[in-house]
Length: 91
Image (cartoon, rainbow, N blue to C red; front, top):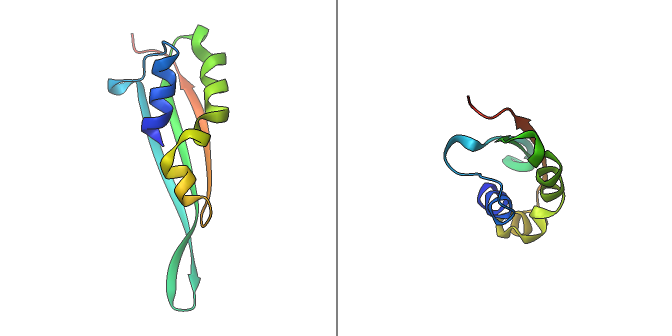
């Protein structure tokens, strides 16, 4: 998912390489019988970007998952959510 989002940003001239884009992922599991099963995944995407890129980055965040092979493969079985946190560019 991170690669798809980063690629979509780069296609719109928003730098997303190096330490500009990162992700923290959490998962929730449930016991199904005697087996732990992943039910939910949440990705917190953190992007270091200039303020003028904020609106475009938020727009891309709204649709990038439709073109993501990982998202499309897993969503039939696992609920996946994400949020975009914009951080100031490093000085």
